[in-house]
Image (cartoon, rainbow, N blue to C red; front, top):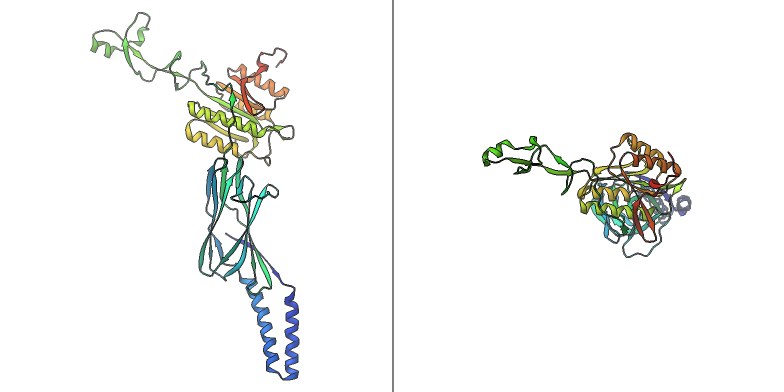
Length: 398
């Protein structure tokens, strides 16, 4: 960890220096060793003070270790710092830590300053000493909290001035606070009639790569389904039995913008999507996320590829936690067009957020391609998942 360093010298130092020089002349005039001693004493104080302000903190090191921890709201966690001092001792210093307001210092009732908290901790460390500083906190709201800055205010050991050390490196610790779900009415598992790769109890499609077993032949069975080896062994015709498969999958789209600003319902929409993610995890439904937050890369928006299970849930919650009012959005219609041109469609498409006339036209095209288009809306303190009303509205024309 590198530090930027500023030193502030007490205004008394120039006066003391001037006074010491005067004493030297007085001692020579009076031929007084006592006065000369006092002059030298004051000069030593001035020089020692300047030297300490120049050297203190030069060899103070922080182990800047990457650490990302995940929390639910009201969970407890901590920031942890390990300092090593190879230089001058630091006595009665003041460590100031600035971090995002998604976590709150434990046991403190404080107001955040400009979306950040800053706390002050007494700090002393001797030469050749290693010291750990722990700051406990409580997760308070959805988001990704980072340590934005560390500052040391170190007073001169003689009391004439101080030095200020400020972190120059990016601090690697993060606290990811997951969003809280809200109930979503109408959230049920739906399977498409498209052929796919997911095993289901009932489907018109089968996995022909390998039979699960055989059963007795019946008159309606196709001739090419007969398992000849099993038939020869049992001396009666046997029919191959294949695993039933179908396609399950959701594509969840979130429009975070309302014109040029973030939509006012963003938190509840994210909470509704969180509930959908939990439901998909419990029902083993694969899904992908598309959010019109600008990113760098081949996909110019927040995109979570199709997946399922615990790992997909964690990625989804972290993606939703990362959405901030500081984000820059891209036009929602552009994201929809990009999806239609470049991404694999799923049998179920869930739209969330503001819709415009252009949005409606594109969503109609999505529905015409075979996807069942649903919409997540917010009513008071819960979400509602329903079929998109415009699909049956003849007044909307492409």
